[in-house]
Image (cartoon, rainbow, N blue to C red; front, side, top):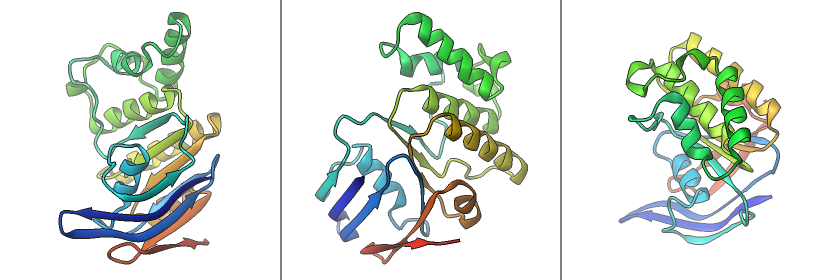
Length: 208
């Protein structure tokens, strides 16, 4: 179990969380729902240690490796598709296994033919495919995803959600997805949690 316990969080004078606690089950896909600006992304940043300015405790992350899919692709522009994957794997795997892993995930996201392409030549959907491949290729125990399908048209969103479902089935790890879309959460989540309050003080599980 991964737990945020009695969290108090401020941005300047703005209180975002007040004595807030939440649990995430390991090996499950949890979707966090809530309106824009309520603190969903802040929870991911605290879990990933990108944000350490809070009071309270986070339990269950010791020795855990995390991978992160942001709202925007955040690909390194001067590296090719293949090099973007290689960058996060360098030093983590022997060379032969590294190449094999890159090949596997490029094939999974159907971008083998674009391995030498640079991010500025790719469509938005292709960039997001690379982001998913990079996140899954990186050895991890926990995958954090922040609105991974935001701004995509319905057809492309459906394609990427299908891809994500396939990748999750391949790699049964803990996944935490931030979204504002109940339909998206219902499709992907083993558990759906709605954040309550402004500032956030509690949460409730939604049963579909």
